[in-house]
Amino acid sequence: MATNSRGPREVLRDYLVKNGLKTSRQRELIADTFFAAEGHLSVDELLDRVRAEDAGVGQATIYRTMKLLAKCGLAEARQFGDGHTRYEHILGKREHHHDHLICTSCGTIVEFVDAQIEALQTRVADAHGFTVVHHKMELYGTCSVCNAAARQP
Amino acid sequence: MATNSRGPREVLRDYLVKNGLKTSRQRELIADTFFAAEGHLSVDELLDRVRAEDAGVGQATIYRTMKLLAKCGLAEARQFGDGHTRYEHILGKREHHHDHLICTSCGTIVEFVDAQIEALQTRVADAHGFTVVHHKMELYGTCSVCNAAARQP
DNA sequence: CTACCTGCAAAAAGTTTGCACCCTC
DNA sequence: GAGGGTGCAAACTTTTTGCAGGTAG
Image (cartoon, rainbow over all chains, first blue to last red; front, side, top):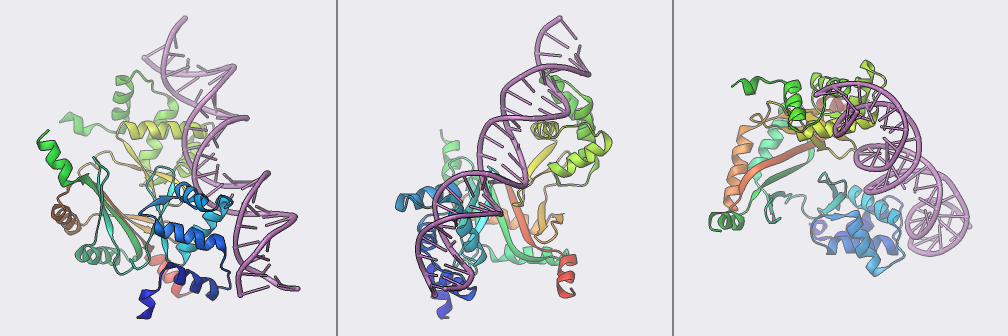
C-alpha cells in the first residue's frame, strides 16, 4: 500500500538499485522534467526543456533515459505517425489506464476510461489467444464546443 | 453501382488519368503485388515481393507508389511502433472498419471488429459531447504461439 | 577503484530528393 | 515530342552505438 504512494523518483531509484544501475544528475533532471510536463512530449521537446535547465545534456542521454523510464514502467512510447516518438507518463495510471478523445477541429484531448470497453478488449484478445499487455485507443471527432460552433456560425 | 465493382487497377487508373499522371509497368506491378498480399506489408516486404517479379525495381519507386496508392484511397499507412511503416489495403473496407491485435514478440497482426466495443465508444464519446468520426484501437501483447513458446522453452 | 554513465561524433535505419535517362500519352 | 516516371545515389531525419573520460557507490 505504501507502494502506491511512491513518486517517479522513488520508482526510478528502486529500479536502478535493483538492477545494479546508478543514479545521476542527468537521469533525475530528465525524469523530473518529464513528469513536470503535461501529456505527450516528443524527444525534441523534452531535450529543449532539459537543456533549459542544463545546457550540457546530450541527446543520447535523453534517448537512453526515456528507454529506461519505459522499462521501469514510468513512461510509454507513442507513435502518432508524424515521425516523432512521443512519451507519455503512466505512473499511477496502471490501474487508471486511460484512452483519448481527440477533437480534430480544435485539438482538445480528453482522457477517459471505460471499464466495460477494457473488459471487452480482454475478451476479444482471449478469443484470439492473445495476452494483452497494453493498448491504445483513440477516438477522433469533434468536441461539444466545435459541434456547437458548426451549428451556429 | 458499377463504381463499387471497380478493382484496385481501375481505381488507380482513374486517379492517374484524372490527375494527368501516367500508368507504368512498375506502378501496376507494385499495386498488383500489394493487393495480392495479405494485410499490413512493410515497405521492405513489399519491395522483396516486387523484386521477385522484377528485380530492377528501385525502392524509391515503392515509396513513391505507396504514397500514390494512399492518395487515391487504396492504401493506408500505419505505424505500429517497430520503426517500419506498413501499408494496409482499404479498398472496399470503408464499411468494414477493423482494429488490431499486435504480438510484440513475433510481430503477428490480427484484425478484428467488435460491435459492442464500437457501440461503447460512441456512448463514451456522447457522454463527453464528442461526435466520433473515426478511431484507432490497438491491443499489444503476445499471441498464442509466443505464449506457448514462453511456457515451454 | 570498479563499473556504470555521459557527451560527442560516427553509424544505422528509414525515407526523401536530385538528376540523367526512359517511357507513356 | 513533351512531361511525367524510374533507378541510382546522395541527402535527410530520427535513433543507436562506440569511445574516452567522468562519476556514483
